[in-house]
Amino acid sequence: MGRCHYDAATQLAKSPPLFGSADHLAGIAAECVIKAMLLDFFGSTQDTPLGIPYSPAIRNRPAPSKTQAEKARKASEHGHLPHVWDQLLLLANGHRGATVLAQIPQQNPFREATDEWDVAHRYRDSGQISAQRVKRHLAAARTVIAAYQQAK
Image (cartoon, rainbow, N blue to C red; front, side):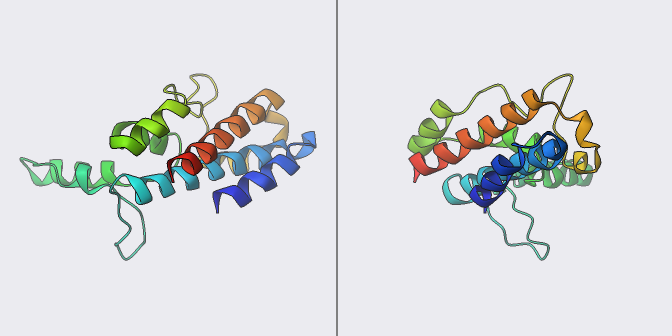
């Protein structure tokens, strides 16, 4: 699924009026591939009624209170970028983890201090999305796609 979003994003990135859609799809592409890596390689699961993938390693940490257990449950869910990128960096381990971590930036390209990617940006005016931002996010999506392929 991530590859299809990436291909669509690269086509949309050719037209400045469509930069918003291109940027959104680049982020969704990276997010899909990261979630695939977490599920396929790093012990995450997708067995809840809503189908939200999560990390049992994070969810099942001992919690001294119900409040802490609820925080662990929320923290374990693989939601949207930029948070899911940080979860990949945290959970990648073993041979495949080394393969993945060697290929992706340790600094989250979707967590720029002045221009953080957010799934809600799909509502932004494309005029607010720069060509540099789209290029950065397309490059990041391409990188995680390649890392996934290499780790298979």
